[in-house]
Image (tube, rainbow, N blue to C red):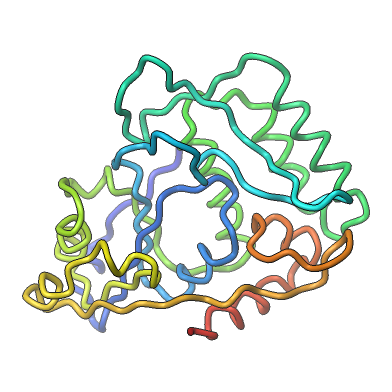
Length: 249
């Protein structure tokens, strides 16, 4: 698995540095990358607890002629107790990988830019990734490159910062020398604005409006996997996402 390394320029920034964080979702929605576009560093929260219930870490929505198409990556949980996200292993029993590949390629057979991403799809559904984090990072790397996102991506496990919120994000910012932390509006109740203030870090909130773009199969459905945007819009997805990132409400 590729590792992103902490460069010396991150320790002594020459200008204000904006840091944001996200868990490593499976085939993330466009808002994930809209936040990355507004950041200098995106920290992937791979060393926090894996949720017990349903989670965007293992599933996301695509679209077919019936509406939302759910794609789920099965993982081992039973009898394992609490796991960190970077410890969760993929369950390879059954033919789910072949079924997912067939479902996605069938749903998007008429999408003009599906072929540009077939190599990645074939890789993620044919290669037997041991851990969920490796599969999800493979997708995130591909999307970052295609969308020309310049934010440096770091793994929490690389930073040596431990703890829970509301102190964890403050610790991340201190480690990276950040001057601003960018969080989605829904996280406001989990973060301690006073703690950020005492650390000299400006806490900023944003809520990107959903990108609207041409889709297959009837009325527009927002916040699908970013794959839907890429399959339908190709290189224009970059401009669409940048417009989304500017629309802060």
